[in-house]
Image 1 (cartoon, rainbow, N blue to C red):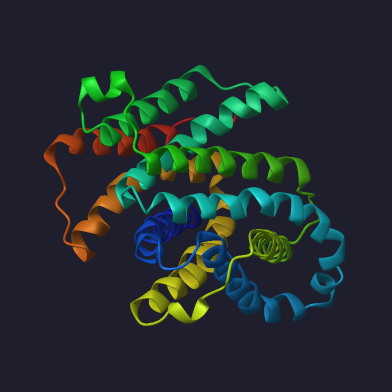
Image 2: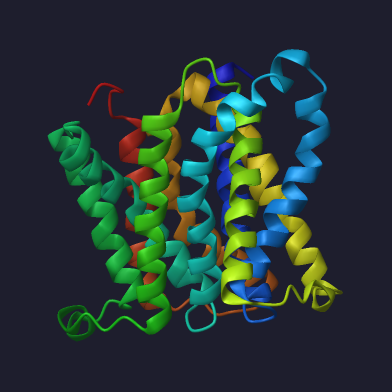
Length: 296
């Protein structure tokens, strides 16, 4: 298997793991407050990553220089997960997974407005196709709902979350330095996110209540910590080197299909026929972006 095919397989696996995180998050939503859930996720991920970061001298001495920049990046990242946990109290995994496909288009627009980075015409059309497909799934193909723009409270909150994850991408562009080891940067972001969430808990005077995370909730948290945080970071990092960031990001449009299939398999939810065209169009956007030249 050559490196390109291997990298596509790695991104595909990462896409499935990310899709699974929406289901795992839905199981945890409402158990304890979202700040405490996010704090628990970041603390556990940081502790698991710590031995690896400390294993090399050049990584150890990079922690302090990277941490201030990672702190800025982590604020957007942490608040995104707060929005996700809170949104899933009143919306579905499929809706959040579908709204997540708006991230490439919104990020490109923000880069155009704030950084002056132009979007290729063909790429813009593909982004619009993906956005239209996302709307089809969210509004279940009903024009009246689209015209009324009747999102529920959870959808609106997660829409704020997608803006925050776009802010995270922009912060990465602005604050990342070529000499930063990715494993140390990820550790710094996780540690910074834990710090922000701990501060929020103190300011809001919220109890941790971590003792309520047990049984299947504990397995859901373990999945978020290991599979959708640490493992996906590794998979995305390795594949981006070969495929480039645009082709890797294009896989986000497979998210609705992956979430729908996982929900059908593990939660026994029905895939409504009316949303299938939207899921197919989202997946088509991934294929079209794979054919786009990297410079566009």
